[in-house]
Length: 152
Length: 81
Image 1 (cartoon, rainbow over the protein chains, first blue to last red):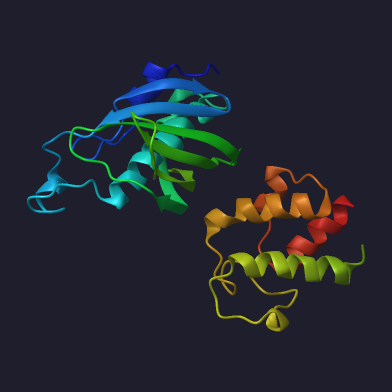
Image 2 (tube, rainbow over the protein chains, first blue to last red; image 1 turned 90 degrees about the horizontal axis):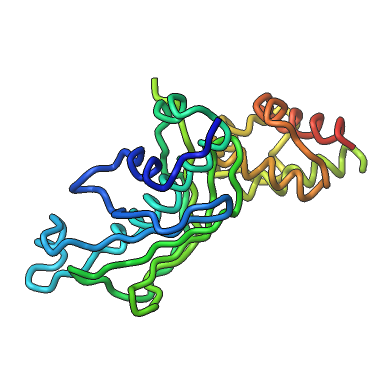
């Protein structure tokens, strides 16, 4: 078993555009992860949320936090316990969340997502996570969890 | 800790995660965690972690996989004390 690099983890995140909200992994280690994403001006949801006044939906911020904090970080932690071909057969599903939103993210904003481990056990990962704008303002924070399930 | 004490502590932990409309007094040894208490299976990990904290024990993953009923929890905990 060899733990995966930041680039290898990023390549294994299964979500793809228009539903991929992770550009690069900045830091990755046993206890946590930091990643970045820039919201494109042409993201599909801005047309409706809201017409003439585009704001990133809270539910998309939650997904953004989960793609880094649960999916990417979970793939990394799993790589310390199992071979890559086993990891590729596992899908990470969202299991629970308790979050607060405290700011707005506009088209073109780059956000920094960070998560630290609460526990990782039997392929279930719970983290404390947050999203900050580049100016340091927190826009979303909370505790989220997901679980790796074998696909049949 | 007696079996009755373990039982009541197990019940208080399980009701935190139950999605069923079940009173604590209706929970028996044979009550099924997933079927009767409607606990989300993803919560079983949290329940086992709560057992570890509450009873100061360590539960192996293989043992945790066998837990189905309240009685299974009580027996598992009693065997570790």
